[in-house]
Length: 463
Image 1 (cartoon, rainbow, N blue to C red):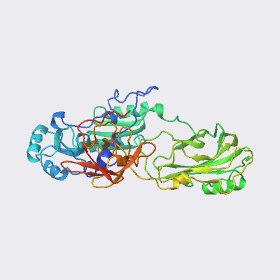
Image 2 (spheres, rainbow, N blue to C red; image 1 turned 120 degrees about the vertical axis):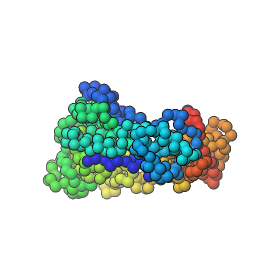
Image 3 (tube, helix red, strand yellow; image 1 turned 30 degrees about the horizontal axis):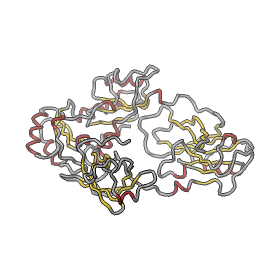
């Protein structure tokens, strides 16, 4: 299905959406013969630069940190000019407005300077109209083979239509190039070398065998059975309709992996069951076969029930989870802790020895870090390291922030803040960003405030 055209100017999240639409993994030339997208006449979306005016068109001020720029006024004026194409916020240039025209951009730049003195706005020339890009996007689904494209969007600030093909196989790249080479399009996808190999579900692997799999049960769940009685309970919890097979519980246990998939990406495959003795974790390796570039966000379950050799289990206490990484926020039930030593032949878990991880049941504090985008005039918790002092706060809303309150020492830190620094040299600050002609970020900790302002230079490296 096609992706809606991103809204480019309404909220801070809009520019983040544009960036997300343009991001894809780095894709080198395919060692198995896939043509380079550039060589085929269709560039990777990540290689298409944002449209910008010449450097001399920009000034050091104003700096827009929120949505305080006069979007509506500029758009209303620009829409009445000949050749108007679109308008967007350029966070890489102090949040200035970029107005695109398909003719007479130089004249419109002079008009903008006269109509909006002191406003950060530039005019740029483009070779397209929004209607032309939208027409190309419609053709993407009309001319390319059914099932090839898993997403498409108009990236207005780059002047291209994105075409997501999942994996950049030679056939898919060639098909896109044959239909759209030389047109304002870009391609997104995964390097075939990084994609899981094609093939059917294997019945067994090193130390495990697959008992059953069905699209049923609950997503983000795991569990374990160690005897016939616990297998009956586990089978029912996983929601399986097939009869439970016979298991030799002297030498095996049964583990349930309650995997999750989006309805547009149902093709899962269990490739392995990994025993990480160092971390005391048993986890699955579940992959998307021919992984798509985009998946719907609905969470659908698929149950995998596997018999695992007891001798391969870690020492207690060990954890069972879906992948090597920790469960995502909001899914604490994914991790199952096992306190019993089930490596012993025929051993069982006593009541209370198999349970969820209580540390995941506690709500994690929500904080932001350098590189994030926040709303203005709203309090946020900000986590930073004080290893090199706090003269430089970091980057927020694509602006680097620095205080003039420091003494010039490279490791400057207010004495009152030093009292609340964690053992890992981190500190949690309460920050509020205020927009305006002189935007600021006020950071507070332990009753002491430090005011930060936009820096004209980049922060120095911190060893």
